[in-house]
Length: 176
Image 1 (cartoon, rainbow, N blue to C red):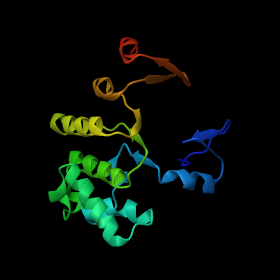
Image 2: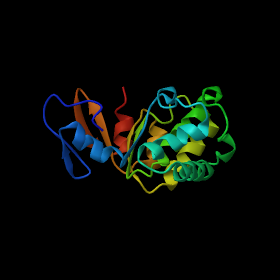
Image 3: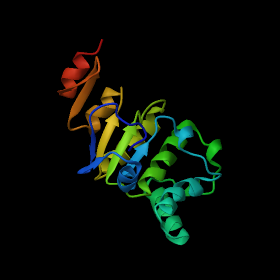
């Protein structure tokens, strides 16, 4: 997404080589990034404001952005959260709302950084069920092998600075 630039090599994303800020901006609207810490992602006074922020920043009219936000909250079973104060939500509620902020922008690809980190089992199961129902491609960074086993079709493991391909079963066996 261009948040960090490589010191060597190049970045090709969604078929486009990205070197400049303008090139990264062109693909950012097609990529949804779910931060590991939802508090880094949520900053508006209410849930509805947070979820509508992305569509607004992509150029949707305010009424359309609110409709997108409400539809996304409804799809996640969070319609009753619309007027809640974001900073008063539980960690699990914040994670689901952060996911809603990403999905409201209708991204082509989802980047998920430790999406189950710190979640209680019921919220974890809800998150997994919803992610499993999505059609977007997902790039997931996670230490939660049970979660990966439910969603991942292909895995890579970072070890000693190198990515290695393999099955999830093999990688779980290789855990130190």
